[in-house]
Length: 273
Image (cartoon, rainbow, N blue to C red):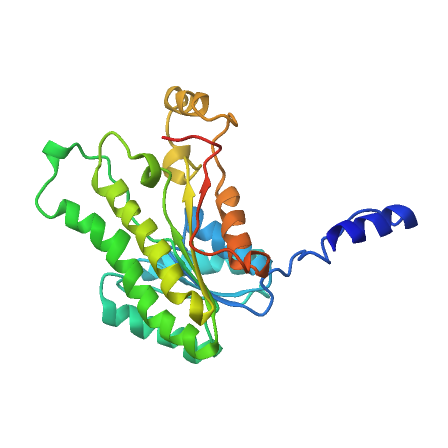
């Protein structure tokens, strides 16, 4: 179809901009999305990308003030965007279920769930404090399950939906230290692949995105002598931007990926940790 449009425009001399025909800025028009960890970094970029493409978005953050700050920033960019926020304790299954049901009550449906909230870790094995490993697993794995379970019930009732999880390049190759983090992301991959098989018959797609080194606030604050060796190990010779990751989440949430499920999409410039 796209080839035919291009050919017709080339022959007619009307140019080759086919953005309207293949999605343009309306790839998620009419969709309702929930994005956890949506107040900054990659999560904020995902929220903005979804709003730019016609979705209504509810972002979840850790605190009222960070949620309000993100909402104010988004509204300052475009007052017409339909965006709201909440700050449930993601480790509390009851609180998450109540927040998810509030979104359903407000918008009538949930088409997309993005599980982006999480914490990283670089502790050496001998230095782990009691409970530290469990803390990482609780937020990076348990919290995702807590959000998915009530959302699946809603998606089944409405006839389908899309669940996206944030993984990491270290879920594929591991990392030299902070074993809790890659362990949690291995678990995210396993949850993604298994739920894709379980929920496929209900027309619910489940995928994950595995980002590489991305220019979040933390990375941007690193000195140049630390950044340059990182870049040297990336075949594309640059660190990823939050928008690079958000674009992957946009594609997987859109109808263009309607036959894609059970995938862990690497977006890391071919850096393999």
